[in-house]
Amino acid sequence: MSRGPLPGFRDFYPEQLAERAYITGVWRDIARRFAFVEYDGPPLETLELYTRKSGEEIVGQLYNFTDKGDREVALRPEMTPTLARMVAAKANALRKPVRWFSIPQLFRYERQQKGRLREHFQLNVDILGEPGVTADAELLAVAIEIMRAYGLGPKDVRARVSDRRLLNALLTSAGVKADQLGPVYAAIDKLGREPLEVTREKWLKATGDEDVAIRLEQTILQKDFGKLRATPEMGADVHTAMEEFGKYLELLDALGVREWVDFDLSIVRGLAYYTGTVFELFDASGEFRAICGGGRYDDLLDAIGGVSMPALGFGMGDVVIGELLRARGLMRRNEIGPDYWIASDSEKLLSKVMQVASRVRAAGKSAEYSLRLQTLSRQMKTASSAGAREVIIVAADEAVAVKNLADGSEKRLTLNELIASL
RNA sequence: GUGGCUGUAGCUCAAUUGGUUAGAGCACCGGUCUGUGGCACCGGGGGUUGCGGGUUCAAUUCCCGUCAGCCACCCCA
Image (tube, rainbow, N blue to C red):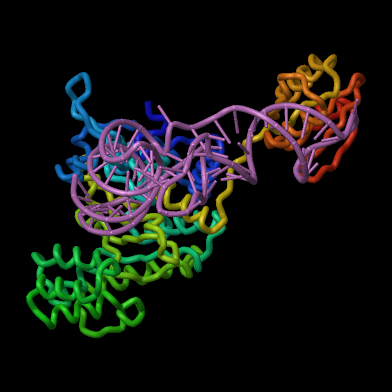
């Protein structure tokens, strides 16, 4: 009998759950500040919901099985199909734009490694029903403000942004044919993970034209949007896409997050999925996987729910965030211990201790006390190690002492005064 | 799924060229300091050295398998 969880799954002892609660608490807090509303869906869906979006290949990465009613089902590997299904079902009834977020537990049957388990919690923030670039700016700002809330700054985390429409226009302008886009994209995606020489060869092989490959490289590696924009003779499609993207950057500035953002055309992400802006958040040192990824997926609702509606969103998992916060000494825990520990120095006072605990609890505060008789010294020790904020020491009369365990200060008052002050 | 590295108390690590009852710190439990926690001191529980085989008089140490973890590939949340 194994004592540990299944590979890739985690046990959350109270300390770990307190850390998870901290991480997800920040998500919820910031998402609400941006006026997103929380929703949830079932952890189990039909297998078809995922194959319709990603094809049969995805089945190899799913926890799927046949249920007792002969239905092909899978534990959800991502939230977006569920969201698309839910929104499509009530598309006409929902006030647009829809601004929803969720914190689902997701599952993937893959070999685990650092930053990547078979199960994780992921914040999903989505905007549906708004085609304009203001929504794109608003969305990225949520992700960045979450980083800020953790105590991270623009020197710790960078947002790399690109736009599928801009990249497509640029590639076409550079001479890449439509049927060459697939392999060209695949090579772009590998940039940074393999030597530049290898990528060059792939581009050359994909396009069959050395001049095209060279223009391609000059374009993709240009990290200065202003310079790229100033390049002459790129065609009307490029011009239009440039205008939109420039607006996007301006709006990010208005939202106060521009200094976190880097223009980077090598950000590709799911090819069949994203249709417009795409972005990823990385720690600046590059030692972790992507913290967050998202973008615009205007065609997905139609593909899944048969309802045409523009949409965009991002996902942010708890695993990489946790590793990053721990590495930077920024991990916090939500408080575990009780507000009050009730203590006494006499066994005769046990029932009084319990009465006080009862009144404290009735006042809405948490209270604990030693279930076994202990010396006052021992009770103090226990209170301290339990993480109690204050100890209430009761006596035979109405006087109580309230000691703050953090700073050692102590005040004396009557029981009624204490309860009234809660 | 493929390949490489690793595996000793809850955690971090020890254990002389394989040598006999596998140790320490932290953590946990208890005690002393006898109305006030963190400190100090004392004591206690806890390991079939991941598991299963093999070689040997003798295996934590060498070999094989297996499981688990880490890393890379694949793929992306």
